[in-house]
Amino acid sequence: METPLDVLVIGGGAAGLAAALTLARSRRDVLVVDAGEPRNAPAAAMHAYLGHDGLPPAELLRRSRAEVESYGGRVRPGTAVAARREGELFAVDTGDGATLRARRLVVATGLVDELPDVPGVRERWGRDVVHCPFCHGWEVRDEPVAVLGTGPMSVHQVLLFSALTDDLVYLRHHAPEPSAEEAEQLAALGVEVVDGEVAGLEVTDDRLTGVRLADGRVVARSTVVVGPRFVARSAVLDDLGVTVADHPMGRVVPSAPDGQTDVPGVWVAGNVTDLSAQVIAAAAGGNLAGARVHADLVTEDTARAVARHREEAA
Image (tube, rainbow, N blue to C red; front, top):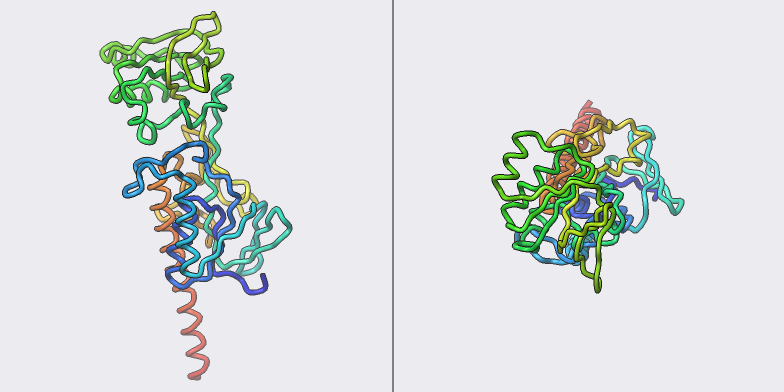
């Protein structure tokens, strides 16, 4: 592309498309590069998105792309593999050999869910293996649910799901033994704590029916709650020097509330900077980042216009 873009958005999920929509409506030349790997692809429906509850994730993306394009924005399939500074511009290389140049970058590449290494978990992920009570809790209300213990936040997950079902067990697996306070909470809520390593899931006719322990016991359950490690997809930012930090839940790209990183001209939005953001929050983050990028460009454009005006008047 010979003429630099105003803004290149890397990642075409809710955050990236929301940023692009805001920018396109401000008449910015904006292009979205989308690898086509949305985090919520395994889920049949998206929840807690006001006005779109129950909508399939793919349908939200289809509608959102169409909205971006209706204002002149563009969406291009591809994967951004590297980014660098070239003077006042950013140059981004894609997996198909192209190099795209832009004045500003919005990175909305999301995160990777690193799932517990238990046979069957990955295959059932997004179906009857879930992690978020706000995304999936209503759908498993009153069902027999197990929370798989993997870390210090596992008991917190138990407490959240206890509001949704009375048939709840805590499979401690590799998690630390509950503290005295946690043990009292679990007992007060009637949650059975099952010690022992989990060896795998039991599935019958493509439905989860239980959890198998290493000693051969099977705990009958129809839903298993896990706690993934959330790792921001941040590799494209490495050569730009953008900070990536450890987080209690994984790895994240820190940013200001509007998504601005510690590298001028680079913004982030969605799960790459907010590991716990649901789809509606990711979209809100993209909207805000898009607005702030536009304002930043206006400031730069105005300064240049003033400089030209002074030269012409001299």
